[in-house]
Length: 363
Image 1 (cartoon, rainbow, N blue to C red):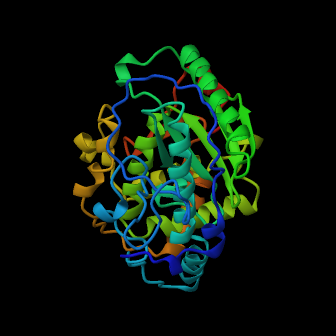
Image 2 (tube, rainbow, N blue to C red):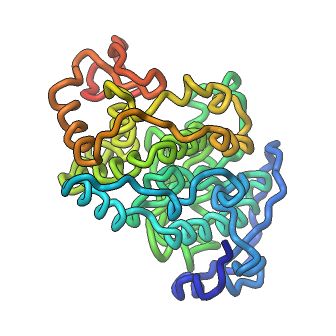
Image 3 (cartoon, one colour):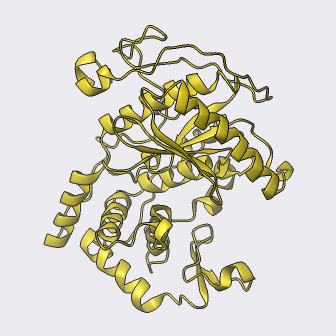
């Protein structure tokens, strides 16, 4: 499908980064840099126009989605509404789901930020991750970015303390770059020294969070995307649960409630544990496709070989939504059980001290 200039919103056409070139410290690393076509905002004289023949790479460091076998959200058939509640679920989903224009705006930001960050870390890669790409995004979803400065085998990772110190140092350089060279486009960049350090910032449209070397998040993005599209009831149900939680102020991890990621896993777990499951364990059924040691530039290829899941469960969206609340209100044993997507069942809750004060445990 071609994108013409007319399909790009006017406000996006007007957005540009500050083209001023300042001297920047270059940090050496040893990550192989795949060949990539670079894109900028339309009209920029620093890179090719975003026009009918230059569609951006929507997955960052992997081939564009049009070259994969991921279903196009527009073409994916939605389930038939069998009752009034199911119809309401579908209507809310269609009104709230992330649109192509939302994803394009995030991608325009990612490609230009990667180009600028590579002035400091020449072989780094910037990935769009999280709900923006996993199939569970809404029109109001923030953008999540992962900067991979170096990709290490899981067995060779440094101690957590050293990783956090290194991440903070890298993010401090990124934050300085955003505050100076990109100050005409990036608003209020802040270094958040949390358990997982991030730089928070805004472009002209939305909020972004940028982390460093959290490669697990990249792998999980494609794992969740596979779950999102192998059964057509998954995405509507997840988005409605997220909207319900947000309406009742239960969807803000910074305030001690549930993160969007946890809510997604809760829905997936429920669909896995029905008497007639609607979802399988992808890690169990396709271990080679979700190998945690797989190189990042291959991660996007794994879901391409996984066929749709044909469940014998014919429950409507309305019945599944009611069943979701019933399961967690009356059946799931919060005191003794933990949610496990990998095992596709509830497993015994760990006895470790780090779990004792947690009301909800998810693996």
